[in-house]
Image (cartoon, rainbow, N blue to C red; front, side, top):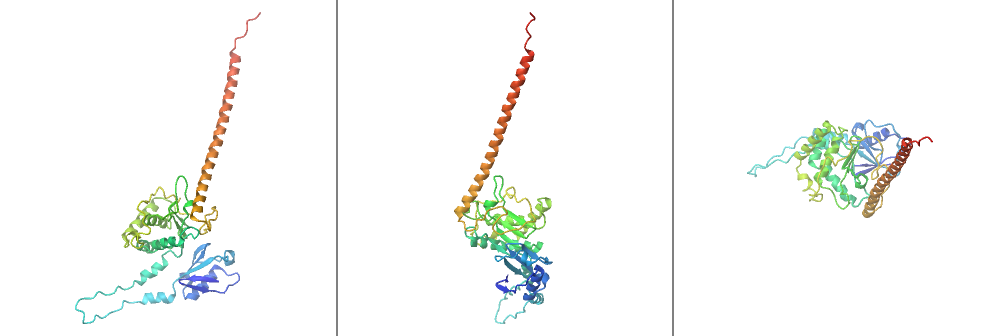
Length: 349
């Protein structure tokens, strides 16, 4: 059994009927960490798991395609961080001007950033140019404003991924983001509807602020909007890279794009169900399709929905016509009966 940890792959002997708890214990022992400080992520499902781990058997959900990621900090590193002191440097007498001391690394901040972060980042590999989407997601995860608010609110997100626009667009609205199970998975609508580009960085970052609020509040009530506004202000205040444009050399800069709360029809944070990366619950597989084929499929789906609506309207129109015809027949029959009643009787002979 292979488990990905940081930049290495750990090999584990497979044990019959092993549970998630037992695997987590073995992983913690391998890296020298407390089991309470490690998390496991099973891709594509069941997803993010942390202490206390379930007593669920691995054989219930593991497949040959399942990838396992381990997140955790060894006790030795934590001890080193706690005992680290700023190095005292002597200034050589040859310097006549004061020399600025090197900045001391903030180990507490680094430790928090490891804990309160996006533990896995995955694009949709069946869509065009997935590596560009990965760069976009990584820039969001490394945004100074986002990292600051993640630490402050102790937000931990299992998986940050993109969403397929074709699966989340209706005539009335389009979904810009989704948050599953209060941070287990966050999906963001990175791409334009035509799949020919990417939405503006600041628009998507604002969407991410919205979805992070769903880690705390599910419904779009006053509590939710107050927290969303607070997070947006925190992100802007800690934005040392000007919205990521400098970081990405304006790779994801789209001045014509905008964010509209009314457009963000995510129906609140949602819970339950299995999340499969790259496929909605009722959507057909699009693996291996080109951008043109994906767009054509999305267009056909919209046309089918439109045709269904037209067929329903036609059916209702025919039923109404039948009712009107039947109503006219009843009216004519009543009129005929009335005429017969009112017709004068002939005089007696």
